[in-house]
Length: 504
Image 1 (tube, rainbow, N blue to C red):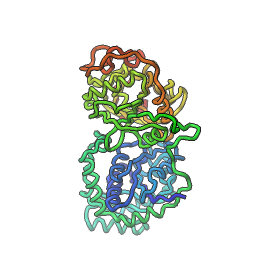
Image 2: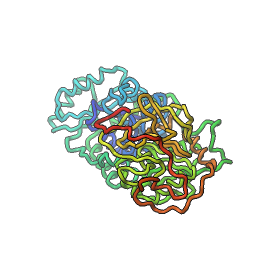
Image 3: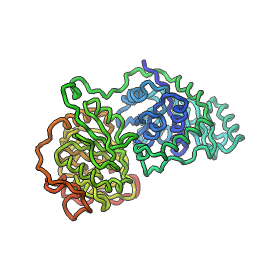
Image 4: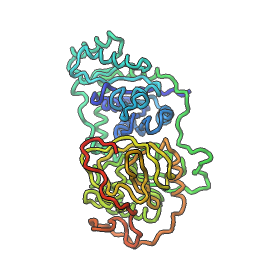
């Protein structure tokens, strides 16, 4: 039986400060010398990245829709192995879920699956004794849920704090801390930068996390919180493991270990942490390539993975790195595996908003107003280096960028209510859909096998030159003498201008 001290942090709704509190708690405990681990409920890799920066070990996502409820506890046990404390940050309000399936996918449902106490972070700036009614309602709504106490945020004064504590004491709810209105300033880098400040090791991100840690350490009773975390019972199941089954062991000693480049930087990658672990366990040597600063792929690269956390807001920086664009195009032209998720699809296009990209795909991208967001149950439309036609995965989409055409002659995926999307060409599999590979470990084993095998013979190419602006036809990133970019379906723009969250 494995016991991991753990806490789930949630709130009545978004905007109460649970993100800053969770990050600050991890930083404060880490400063005290504890080995801590951070997790984010839902598909948000940005919050997970900052939780990882605060804890000193990779932050991870726990998404019941993407990995299945049965994998939540095993993934936590894996990510928090030998840790003194696991902090799980909730999503939205305690009983909310992105898909509307609160009974299985809300923070409350995940906390129940993890058998973890919940600490509510409550913004009390405009609240008095009513805080007791609010917290009592959340506690009574689901008697199976273990609400262990609250942290008060944006307290106005000492008198205000006394009033709030007395009200909560009347209903028997512990208060673990009270932060004043100025204690949690908006110090984290703008969300438009996504995970880049963490992945690239920016000093701004490190200073922000340290500031939150100092604020929490000064206002929250860390010892009492640790005691609550240690009261969580054992989880009677084994930890998740990236190791492949014996019958699917591509990491046999007599097989070569292919070099697989994963887009990222010194602070991590744009993929889920488990993706890298699965690739290594399947027999690959995983190395990082920074798409903004590295001008060449790592020596011996036989495959490339561009994860879904690469932000669309950095298309100018991606376009400016022409030498790496050429290297990626050459890798794809020779038939080596290239797997791109999310904004990685835009990077492989001919251009985005007039900026030249890698030119692997004969498609043009643009960034529109509004956001396409949601989960998709997708069926593979083409055999590729990672999937077999007809296989079904659940993935998440969150993007402003659209491609014209939306998919190639061999599209990657389709789902109910949407036209086929994405591109499969030679060893390329590119789509804006982002699955969680921990739920589909065969994606990694297949990719490693494809990277190990010799690709089909391809025509020789003339020496590449740094491309200029895209021409009216052809593809800027494909060296002359190649057989060109992935062919596209004969289709015009298929996504109208967006004004808000859209389900495709």
